Image 1 (spheres, rainbow, N blue to C red):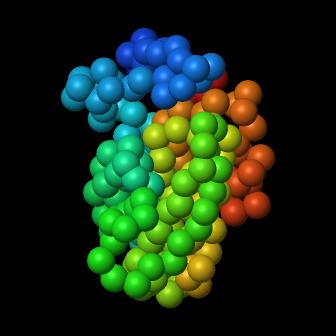
Image 2: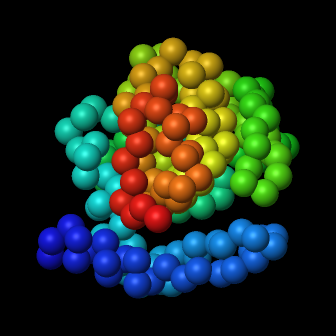
Amino acid sequence: MHTTDSITRLEAQIHDVPDFPKPGVVYKDFTPLLADASSLALAVELMVNPYRGKGIDLVVGAESRGFIFGTAIAQSLSAGFVPVRKPGKLPRAVHAVDYELEYGTDRLEIHSDALTHGAKVLIVDDLLATGGTMRASCELVTKADVEIAGITVLIELGFLNGADHVHEFAPVHSVIQY
């Protein structure tokens, strides 16, 4: 299957939900894609392929949908997985970053000892919109002495220019662009 055919197949399973989570936002619901085993496997492969053989040690994924793809990508790369969580969810000392979302503000945290000195890290999320969550994830990761080898997402909302807010950390690979 050619990549354009693969992307078309995935796009067919993503539904637009207007006015969610608030008026004016069009939410890209990819949960039907997750329910189809072959589409889920295809999405993971298309997200991970540029990073095969690149020596990725750890995959970092933001709560909560970054966990879905992050753990699958980590397994595919024989790498570890490090969660980035919302406040109050991690039991030990943390680093924290406040950030802006497309529809509000929030905070992300990572265990302060989660990243191994010198590790090559891949940052994963389901969607790149304004870049707030991804930028916060990158800022958290840079608090450790690691190399961000790349950023991979299933969906990029290019019209919101989120990649412009994270390109200084690493190149962005997105499977589907709107």
